[in-house]
View 1 (cartoon, one colour):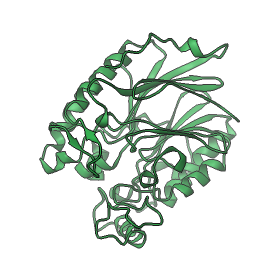
View 2 (cartoon, helix red, strand yellow; view 1 turned 90 degrees about the horizontal axis):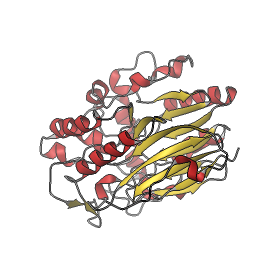
View 3 (cartoon, helix red, strand yellow; view 1 turned 90 degrees about the vertical axis):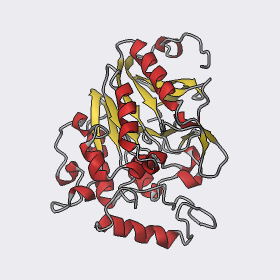
Length: 346
């Protein structure tokens, strides 16, 4: 492991008040397989060792003080190779058994690798559905993660929000609401998503961005339905009204400055438009791009993309703890993830 000096939240804070802290980890992509490489064959992936890194992250979080409230797991918890080897359920069970050692709640987002392994219906019934931790505030007809009163379970989006302390809210978005991954081919969303993808990507291999004017339109990405964006807007309106600060969470980044163009959400501009129409959003957390990234946009929103566990060598690490103050977020990273201070600009 990388050696890092002992660090306490107060060392970067001045006179700021610490409200709470939470853990972040992304792209574990565990599989009981020898090391391999990414889609382009350019980056080594440590499938089996990712479980050891998760265990050590959990050990560290359990040692931290009582201010640690929860952990955000940013998606791709097991690798898609598990589906080929018919080990999806056993791999997920091994990872979740590690997470059960945490003494705090875990909020899960879904990435493309969850959907390589499982249907959305399966995920909804699984331990990766952490929506039971949602705040139960009334936000009107869009509040149930359902596109219309007649929508089936397969048509739902997986999104929710929660407030760990007064004046702070977290919103988890479903970046594969529009996607051909994990949905039954008979559903309207699958048909609409396939039509959109093929309109934007004429390549025979839909995972290839070759020649695309909009490289994000590949199969391993996805997007947000209008219904989900309407719900998102409604939650942000509530937060504006109640003078809350909001952290948005998604597997896929939504700002080109925080990721490579091939790792953006399909309709990232629509998501940004909603975010920028409100004053409350201070940070957007994502995974997906295993190299990580960061960008402070023109509206003062910090876009932080976490480095992925699966491409982290055994001697390093890739997880963090974010300390929430009255005037900033302070990321204490481990291994490949650098420390960062993110001031609220509004």
